Image 1 (spheres, one colour):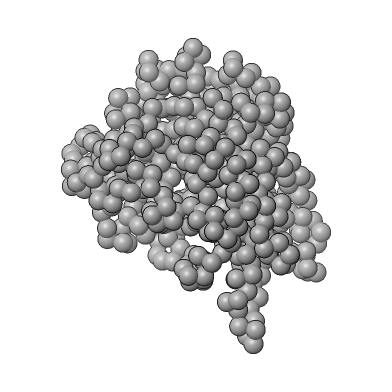
Image 2 (tube, rainbow, N blue to C red; image 1 turned 30 degrees about the vertical axis):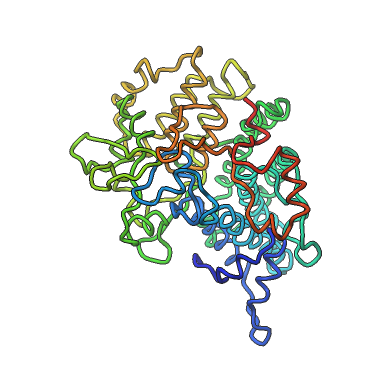
Length: 479
């Protein structure tokens, strides 16, 4: 379920998402047809999404580098933002389109054809799929900007899909989540096949609303009216209220269903990653209690020294990743209460003043506390002491920097969100990589296959966004 069924050579022949289905069908023996159930496809797509989000593998996912949570010991191309050498953009493009979106699309077909399901059960399952598809689409948009959307996943009729405007996609994704709310309340959806919530539809509803809140807050600077209405709508219908609501993937203790972190940090036997000095220095300056969870004390009790970001670093004299992240059962985070709290803090800040429940101070402190609790820090006195520090205590005059920095620290194990937080808040200040001094990417460049095989649409998209460069801002990154 977690392993690729298509060879690397075949993957390299894919022309964006539209050809995935066509080439996938070439791998099937017509004399021995196979047919997967909607349950298998739903689980497989969920795990593929979770694995991608959690993976630190430099061939697949380098968000932990781009967010400057980790850095490398020997091979420093990716921490210096050379993403084309290993064709990282193509890997993400193929993984999300083929192993997540296409599988979920096929699952929809099976659900609609299943006469054993009531209409309520069908609708609820379709609602769960909608939430995961919206999540996956947002990951693609937040990584690349304009992408194939309305013409995607239609290989039989559209082999070279046009790209859609990223802002327009966001508008549609918000509408899809609002529609999913009705579907999710229609009946019982996937249960045993649901590796996130085990079929708890009330939690799926909170996840859907929380994801809508994320989308809404992302566009607060680019589409303020929709941001306000969508955020208020999401909050009023129920978002995460505690860590018990977190959308996480539960992994197993033995292969093949282990957390990809364990696979690359332990099973591989390699020593390629250390904590980045960017994160370590900021947390050291704040005397952050989460250091004992995020980092190992391999240099001595209470000693944390990050590797110089983007330079070669000796493994033995740099701080390692914390023990919890070396556990094969370490959960994979899709979305958590800390993230929701920081979105609500921003929404209730004086800059926006959206009509959502609570106040900025409460939400800000909830975000920090939720992150602390998730790290196993339950001592409220220690948490209160941290929150009372002058460089942590909420101050409306320094709202953006405080929220941005604490939000970024809290997203250590959800690194694409850490990258988005930095792009959105411009906080904290990230380092220039030691080997090249290249600026931090604002997006991925499009996959080479798109340039070669979908050239006309690629050229139009590149021109529309202002150039296919790592320094081209996304539509929502306007400040």
